[in-house]
Length: 237
Image (cartoon, rainbow, N blue to C red; front, side, top):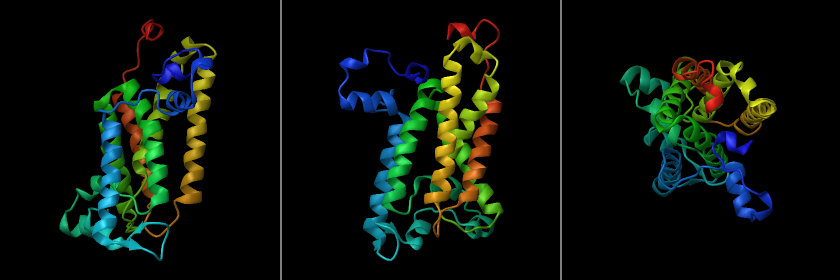
């Protein structure tokens, strides 16, 4: 199944532990790619926020103060509405409020977006990350939750995957038994995302409704931009 998402089919008995991790979770990781660059940028911004605003010792481990998140571009419905600071819809995608959520976010971004970038290209990956992610932030603003950051970019990728499965449903028959593996893989990711959101994402500055908006945005982008091969083309991919 790994080869479907851009990995390399080789004899697993010749792999070491780190080869296994790479091929299982990040089969197409590159030093210079949108996914790795955006991941490094997120980490740098998190460290910078801690250095500038200090550590909030009354919250989770290595938490960032709410004011610091806002100063660095966290989403704020009031600023968007009254000061027209729409840039916050995108900058909030790069901000995370504590170490635990940062690690999980980087882990998910590396897995989800490396696969997306390997199969769909960098341009569509950027559109999903910022376009559908911004849709999630906008959705949260419409609910006026006043939350400063969201996981909408990761849910955008999941929505995109589900849109692809829907569009390719008939064409996936060409994969034979691998069709079931692909569908199960996407289903497992969706279940993991849902559990993660409601078990770990409930705190005072994460926008769970924004995640729903990101999911819908990713689904819309998949339905709008993915070109489904015509009969006879899919088998040659």
